[in-house]
Length: 469
Image (cartoon, rainbow, N blue to C red; front, side, top):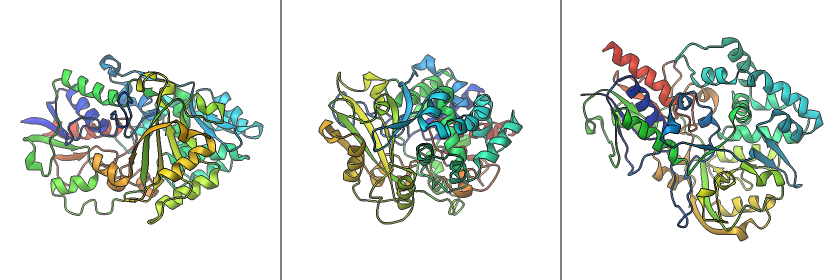
């Protein structure tokens, strides 16, 4: 009998398996698809030689993850590559605000009225970032905080809505960039805890950047799987699971799946019926005949580029995506240009480009024209560079990855109490009513992103259970 079986070979499932195997437990991973990776995959979606990331592409939380940093993933081929700027936010007038590794450079891009405000906001936390990241990403009480005072100060700043925090800034440039940071988790700007979301992304950039993985996000998953195999674990692909009886006998079962899928497989009835799924996304992967022709020079050297003319436009787009029915007319876009840091992603002189906008959950329309109109506002002539597109709306994203219910790449709404207390309001979110069944997906704290911390935290709950039996 195995000690643990993990269902789902995404970053969280693989991290949970590695953490258990490191402690001497026998582990096997079962993945429904024919390749591993979940939200960290790389495929030739458009043309031969163009390597695209179907989901996550830039990894501010990955390089800053306490779980990943504790593992020897670089020995297994993981290499982080950095653009000159982690992120740029261009404006219609051809200028841009930036999120730089340098706090001073970032502050200067906001203008003189907000430069000092920004420095005073981030510098107290940046000096204690590693400890703060560990404490913040280990919530809820999987471990005692190492620096409870700093964590409490961070909570006082971050737990109110981001709209409160933005009042500190006097000009629109800083407010717009910060609104875009919050929108990465598809959260309403006025939601509880959204100030913390924006701060975490900013601090992550200053601490270690927003890199891409050399060769594509698949290299993160491949490194985890290779390390797991060296530890004696096994990975089985093309193995769909419909019920617990489909799996070999084990002392514990750990699910890197949506809560609703877990309830169905494990026979938990209506246990997760109140779990809410959020807005979906409409994603386009492009093969380009050269770099994106951004008007703003800063955007040309940034790994990630946010597209929204101002805070009001971003807020309107988020609100439209949260409602059923029509998608926003001017969607807020998150784009990544991996080739700025990693020229191996495309043939010489060409580029891959990654972009998505927010749409209502389950939306079945086509956002291509609206997204490209937005891109043309900030990069005139963009359409002329397009060689091929791979388009995926909510139905296609959910078909590729069952965790993205209705196209929700956050695996659950990141709003209200569900921002922190997910998938249920409890201090023990990785446990289920079945004593041998656990959940480790992005539906558990600390939530979405390729960082492995949900798997790391869940593994702690599992090995405590195994030691008791």
